[in-house]
Length: 122
Image (tube, rainbow, N blue to C red; front, side, top):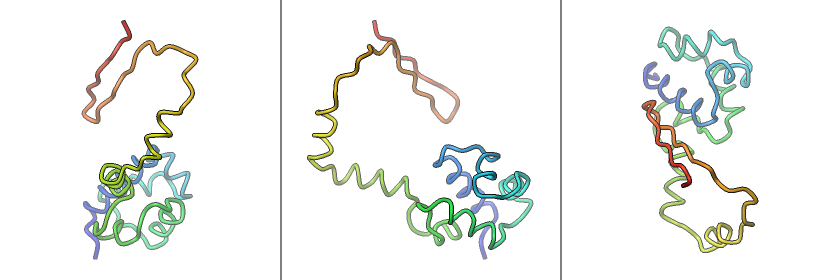
């Protein structure tokens, strides 16, 4: 049996990974917005139909991870692979990119806690 709170956390992680809001994610997978809301709040348990819709639209997500939290989430796996196994071709791709035609004025980094850093080109 799946733990509702843990499932809700994993579902939120999936929604964030795909850059969706709960509302847009509901539309994407073909369920009502209230279904997502009720699952995320812990009010309802996910149905098999709901889980299958998530998996059919989010091909990077594995059933066992979504249901039990066992295994790796796609973003974690890709990040680990990039850190542990950088290839020379990855560096070549970066170094051979054409120069930007526009100058960068500033870069803003937003953190999940709501804070941000602003870097301006002097």
